[in-house]
Length: 299
Image (cartoon, rainbow, N blue to C red; front, side):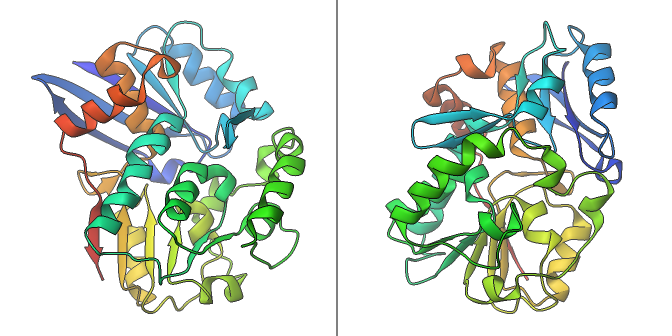
């Protein structure tokens, strides 16, 4: 049996363990939350380095991407640099392939269409999803100034302004303490309604679920959420808000969907490769073999 551990900066209340069979071999997938403690993450990475087949980096991103530029998060790098042997995946390859392809598939099947306006609370963390919507003709609202930077309750649609902001802000953002940008640890469990004007203008809310959940209003009637990392509790919270549909780009394993970093770490283990050495065609071949497709839950 091969073993994959996702070490997360997030809440330990969301820990989960599951297994998957691929080409006759069993893989154990486990998520371990550290409640916002990067030093504990380092301890777990050090303890299991060389003893498991792949690590996922959860709770924060190692990279932000915009067009052909990649920016490294200082806080994340300081955690993963303790790993010397085991491949580490932050989910970038899955976002670039499975997640982007899922948007195209939903479009092809008529589940979503360009008449629907899309809000991505942190498009910088979901650039390939943003790119997929734009390529298909959707109006996409870039919510980063509000949800990630807490600068203003505004969403940006103008592509020229998005280009300017991304060019100016991303090199600075990746040097900031991650806790200023993202709900971590116990904050993941909190819902503090905010930015209702941005939620209200969208038909589709897409991207990282913690960004979506942290400030979601009591009423999301008729809307579609496209995300991942959902638990049964999350689905019930969305049902209470009269959501029309929730779609996860990663499949269900024993009652919940795993994050992109877990899926990417699984591919690293399956191919015995580092994430940066895996071609997009190899990711897609594994996902095709496993028949991965969007999980649609009508509420």
